[in-house]
Length: 340
Image (cartoon, rainbow, N blue to C red; front, side, top):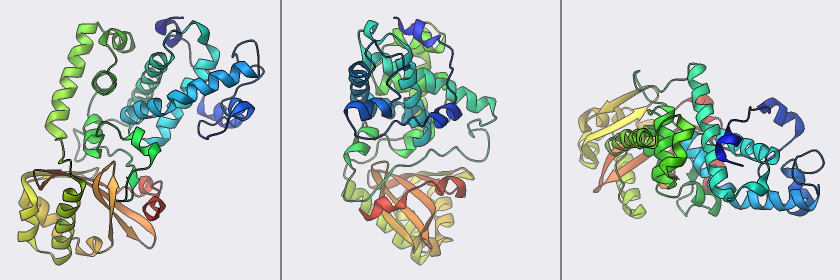
């Protein structure tokens, strides 16, 4: 079965239908339990043997799940939507003739890319356009970790230095640009395989990725690799903010620093420092954390997060601050991970 034949298949499983059947994508079970977890068994369309055939396919799918979730998170900027995309890939696999797929990992990556592309286009249909023409930017869902380190599951999700700044820039791309950049630049998918997904020639797909790459290079600078140094800079920023010390704040900021949130974008060290100095009370309840693997803070009041700040530290100064302060989305942020 070719990728194009499979990807032209009409979607028949809505999220409501998946919820009603109780299908899940997570877990570490095996045998019949894993087959049931992925919807295997009689009527699943997985081989002739409803037992061992579905179990084997579920095991093969599980071996690729980390990579697929990483692709989907970079495409969608949402952990929940990423899990939905991975689940949809499993559902489509159960309806396909998996025995005719030579490279299951590559095939599934392409499928998840197509599912995510459809989800991004659906956002636009619902009016959820990127906010690049408005006052602010669309903030992706952050991945929080204690400063002690990232757990193994998060390591796969955050490989290749996928900081929040990169995801913020990806939110400003068109769906086709985002797909071309993510699949090619981050997961080494050839343009010959990307082209059918976006309805372009390989050369045109290459141009999509090139445009995206220029945006990423301009808006998501590579951070200093030393986490300890990053944390020192962020703690100096917080200390100055708590004291309302404008001079000290300017000293830790890059002259061209950019602070981004869904409410607006502020540029320049003096402007960013002036805003930060007005929020001394929030700086006092900020907890250090790793935000997408880089130094950041979570502002917690009465046990609830009221803000997540991700810092991009370049050459010892803060170059980018990305701020999530939307109450509805913050309600989905699990701050208990910081106590592990």
